[in-house]
Image (cartoon, rainbow, N blue to C red):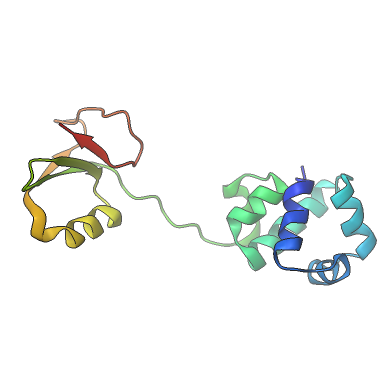
Length: 145
């Protein structure tokens, strides 16, 4: 289902007229106007639109505008999505101040360690399922007291 608000917002974000946006999407100005007014495209048109939006603005934008699942947009457009980080370890960083921070082992954790290296006293790796305590977070940095 086409999200008419997101569709129009995208057009206005790039300062396209309906005619220019239609040219980019290979649709008439009338079709763009109808879609912005709430007329729904046929399923095949919606999928074609998702592909064009994915190529021009990215998979996430195409998903927002067309309401088609992210994986389906990627499959239709042939765009490879990044693989999610493997979250099989937790890194617990103990700072010289005594504060502890737990985070999934990924690029963000490495960046934090590099940025704060001078203030770190200890780094501990904990495998999930062995000594992991659920902090009630999903990829968010959690403070431990």
